[in-house]
Length: 285
Image (cartoon, rainbow, N blue to C red; front, side):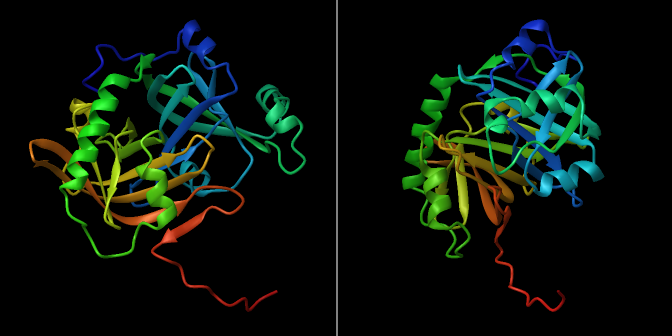
C-alpha cells in the first residue's frame, strides 16, 4: 500500500469514535472460489475494539457464501465527512445473540422495520489498516474531467450488450460512488476508490489514473477486477471484468476494463444479470 507512510495493526480511539455514526458507507471485499474479487455494501460494518470489526446480516448474497470458504477480506469504511479507512481482516465467527446483535437490532433502521432485522453477526479480526484518510476531492474532480474527455475519444467499444441502460446511468453519473477491487498477491482483496470511472460503449469501463495512481499501477494487465457502483439513493451494481492496462488517449492516461459479468446486489433478490441465466422449470415441489 505504497501511498501511505504507515500501516496500523489496531484501530485508535479516534478511529472507533469515527465509526459510531449509523449513516456511513461500509464495503466488504471477499474472494470467490476462483480467487476473483467481490464487493458488498455492508452499512452496519464497524469496529467494536481496536482489533475486531463486526457487521450484521439481514439479507442473503454471495459474500456470505464466500467469506465462510475464504476468511480473507478487504474493507472500506467512509463517513459522511468523506474520510475513509481501508484495510484487511480475517473472518472468524458468527453469532445469533449477544451485545453486537442487540446493538444493531436496536438502531432505528432495524428496530422499526416490519420486514427484516439483523439475524446473524459476523466477526472479523483486523490484520492491518491504513488509518483515516480524506478522499482527495480535488484529485477526484480532475480525474473525472480527464476520464470524460478520454471517453469522448475512445470510440464506442464492444458491440456486446453487457452493460444495460440502468447500469450505464449508475456508473456514468459523476456524483455516484465507485470502487475497484482486485485480489492481491497475499490473497486479500484490495479496495481503491475510482469515482472517476465511466462506461465506454456497452462492454467497457475506463478511468483516469491521475488519482490513487501508485495503487492503480499495482494492478497487473489481464487481471480480473471488480467495480462496485452506488448511488446516493442506495441503488447498487457490481461488475467484473479483465483489466486491459493503461493507455494514453490524447495525452490522458486511462485504465480500461472489459466487463464480462454483472451482478445486482440489491434486496430482495440479489442475482446475476450478465451473462443472463436461463430460467429453469420447477420440477419438484
